Length: 395
Image (cartoon, rainbow, N blue to C red; front, side, top):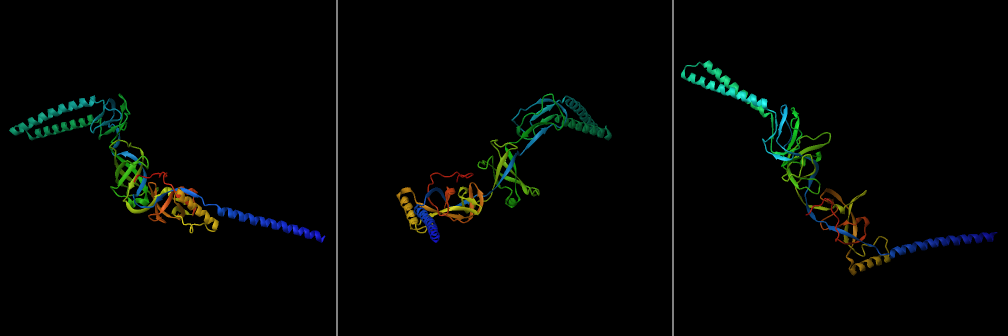
């Protein structure tokens, strides 16, 4: 019985020792395998950090309207006799656009002019008699009053006749006629829209935090998209009151529209130009990586075989680094080490982001290929293919 127990105990010890020895052997084999594996070299594109001239601005969304734009209406009732314009034609100030039936007003005006001429002649005879000393002063006063009343009646009827004609209040482009011949019109009926398309206004709003940066006369750029702003103008009005419900301030700019590409009611992008700032450190937005721990970039430095060995690497790992250097010397480009640098960012504009802290002029940062990198990774540079900078302008 005792012999059987001793044999079983020995077998258990042998099996347990074999398992422990196998695990130790396996761990050492895996460690040696990875230690002898050469560090992979990744290819990235880079940008050298240089101080630039930063052109700050205030971006907003605006609505276009004509500097002079109205919906034309008639002042009195009547039947449309003539329509003297067609859609999308240019009219000059004072041109007659619509004429209502005015026969009665013309007849009344002719009668009033005849009476005014008669009263004028009566006044001249009364003055002549008064000069000769055979006329009374009361007769002269009555003649002057009658002549003045007749002249006023003529002026009144001329004004009534003019109300039967709709004239252009300013030069511009007139829209589609909204009336027909023979139609009865009443005051307030819209005939057509008249817009001066040579000068446009753009109304937009900016946050109250930027209110102090706005000034009358500041230059603005306007366009249909943020990347294309061909129109320039200046601020002509800033609302002195901030809307308490939205915390926005209303701003108006005037823009020249010589080619007629802007249309009233159109949605546009607006950028208020602020004074330029020199020696600003900025990198392309593609170089910046945002994470839960903060914003960072990968900065490159030359490979140093002794200092760039991975923590805990043995002699075999250093041999792998030397193999990478030998491959580099064979003509595949210089090898660098990528360092993860946490930075403090500032403003963003035109595809670039301002770096307030963390980088200095002359640093080389990765702007494409960061998704494959980790801190301490070995890389080579290939700038033949550059990433597209969304919103970037040609410098």
